Amino acid sequence: MRTDVNSRFISVLQLGALDYSTGLRLQEKLVVLRKEGRVGDVLLLLEHTPVITLGRNAKSANVVAAPEVLASRGVEVHECDRGGDVTFHGPGQLVAYPVFDLRGFPSASASRKTLGAVEFVRRLEEVLVRTCAEFGIETKRISGLTGVWTEARIGSGHVGTGALARPAESKTQQLNASEAKIAALGVHISRGVTSHGVALNVNTDLSFFKLIIPCGITSKPVTSMQKELGRVVPIQDVAHTLSRNFGIVFESQILWPDSLDALLGTNSWCANDGSGETAQDS
Image (spheres, rainbow, N blue to C red):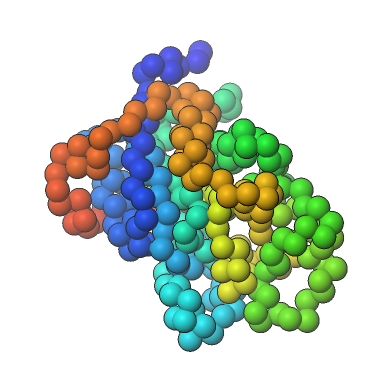
């Protein structure tokens, strides 16, 4: 039996630009509060200042730029506990961090009652596919890979991977790539509560991806909504569309708290409570 949408709510907080450490501390605080039942499900929407993050499965060799190059471009490097390899976050990229208790969402599978990690990831991908479609960009999943991909056009000029360190890689490989990655995904789940999430390239400066091998994949390029449409896309429009699709896919009402303090009821959210959690990758 399908649960009434009116019984579930997702509070969306738009935070603007944040450095990665601040965003991570906020997630950690919310995860603790969600486990304690002191807040409901929360979706954080933001842009990060330039940063390369290494997930639990990351290989340091996939950061191909030298430290002095990263410093010259103002790019920080952080290790984190999400699943996946290496990725980049920066201005023009819409990052969404869902802090959800999966035990509150019914599963579509007959074998379990509530959402598991794999089904959660598939739903995040569905949110991204629907959002891109509303802007006229056809996207898809690729079996065996996470994230969302768009069909590349021959000669489209999508950005290749690891270009700084691999000048000898074939340009033909880039031009003939059948898919280009428009959104990355990596999550962490602890005692049923999620953190980290998705990153959708809206108006991202794609040259930053030449500093890394995104997600450790050398054969597929990276793209953005701006690249696909040939125009700048208002990131606020994308944020509202993404939020609406979270409500649809997760069958929840979307709430818009006035502020972070209004949600938390405190001004000391930067404190790191620590949760004693164990990691679960997906």
